[in-house]
Image (tube, rainbow, N blue to C red):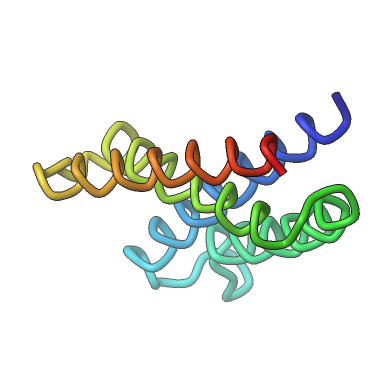
Length: 113
């Protein structure tokens, strides 16, 4: 259960970080006191993601962790479509399916070994 929660936290924090950075980059004008809080928030979430990643590596083989972490590409595509209005193209769908299949294959390889 702990590992599942760590993975969930990692996916949420990395996806949110990317979305905040995208929003911040789209509005590079500074805000109060010359700060862009979306960019600062995005980088703060990357620090949190790094700490979570270190915990995940304690329990997971590196090659499995890297493959599973690629699920963030899927969540970013979904998030950017629904929250930023970015289009999801046919190539995006095919790529997302390929990433999902790769995660499934590697995940099953872990169980077999």
